[in-house]
Length: 297
Image (tube, rainbow, N blue to C red):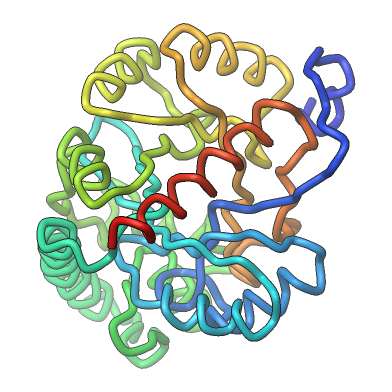
């Protein structure tokens, strides 16, 4: 059962003034399909008036989204999703950072170089077996090309019928197009976000196949602020488990849709938000942090 189906069974105080937000969104500056400006328009149309565009390892869409937000009445905070080195997929979301902080910029530049080297090898391997993906990969200037972008190119070349099939046949470990990439150290990611004045959030912990207690302990020691518990794939059982984990380490609770536009169906902006005390309290902390950063800048 998805948490949205069983949330009424969770005892949590509800604040009267519902403030939907979405702090996990991808634009076409990584593996989403909509531009930052289009995302702002979609958020407004859907009644989501506070968002963060959190593209993979880059902040190239933040300014465009913030400018559009000012024009359309949608509050846009700075955001990023950093892919980190771990035994399974592990992403750290940063919110409210100073995107011009030198160490933060350097971290993203290093990640970009490693990813570009990996992508070049993947494309070469796929084209060696007759899949002309380079002709199909669409990316904006300064955008991050992820394996999802490459999977889409494989589908567009008619060598797979779905992204899942593209990964299973060509991109997963042991397949012709798999290439290891050196990712950012997870502790460094959290510390760099904090150094840049940001809030560090563990993305979609419901997906982690590991010792979550040890992982969260280590990340908390580095400065982790919150867990992204309200997420489209979080089950009711996971919700209770993750809330206990957040309480154990005195962490806040965040919400994000992981919106990718047409690249991820049945996921709408703001769909993971619930009007519960823990999310509204985190919302207030984020707004206060942003105000503090502006005052100090």
